[in-house]
Length: 377
Image 1 (spheres, rainbow, N blue to C red):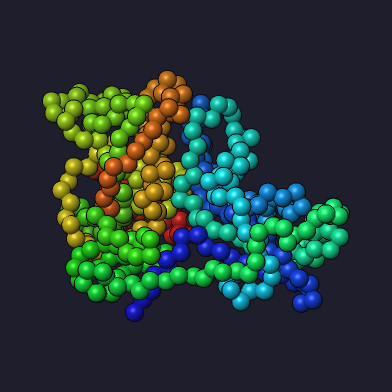
Image 2: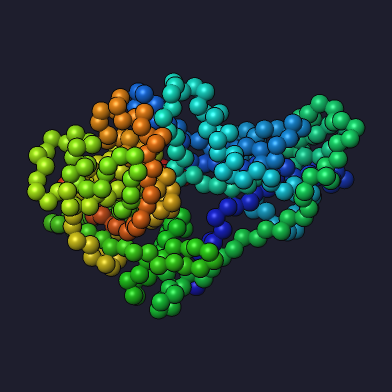
């Protein structure tokens, strides 16, 4: 029987090369891996980031672990690990603005909006030992000036590690059949009762899902997308007619379009920034109307690797990618609020030709090599 990794925030320990007689102090850092989108007067800028930041504000320990999170072999934290583990005092929500500021200094102003999308969140514990200074236990050299006489690390909350990796049996809660999915998938499917599940609060939660029927012959590859119904405050965007006006589409508004719901679309998989925006924009502007088949399609399915909440974080950037005129609407972005109401996971069939996947009806096109690279994001 397969098991499903349940933890959302992983905790890792960096290796050290310090003699055993040294008492190690493990200082915590938040690590963010993801894409930072910034909306500025010239358009939307993006950057793939892998960065760490102190989880405790301290002038004696380094601000980040630098490139070590990418170059050193990390291991999961376990209760058997010896040393004093300091307890994080800053939440990731408090640290995100600090990280955004670090990347905002090189961007032209004003910055109308920023979003972290697809981030992988974890806590890194970096080893140090204390003498007259704070010493890096990886390189065995000081990283601080002389510590003040009243410095006492025991006054900082901490202790032995009490975190373990959690798993849940990958069994369908409805029928007991084995759930299927790739190792990096955050949602698993049951082919026995045609259901789809994601983890939440220590258990599996059923997803509303479906797929579009394929048309014609030839190889087909199914990609997952989130279809999201949301309320927008600060801009009128609740119908297809509103979309035509806001995006300045070359179409004459037809009778009934004011009663036709507007839906956001987003990839349900991680992919490089320009592809993420392009797929989101083109599918949202296309507004597919096909009736969904509420069962798993037969064929190759790409795994769901982007949670719905991450897709929701990208909705304003999706909006910014097609609104016109930008000069008038971009300054309004800070006052626009998007509230998701319901969502559906939709598998869309793309024609496969060589390394290219395409769906001309919705202007979807992506190279399979890009998808392979994206699994490391």
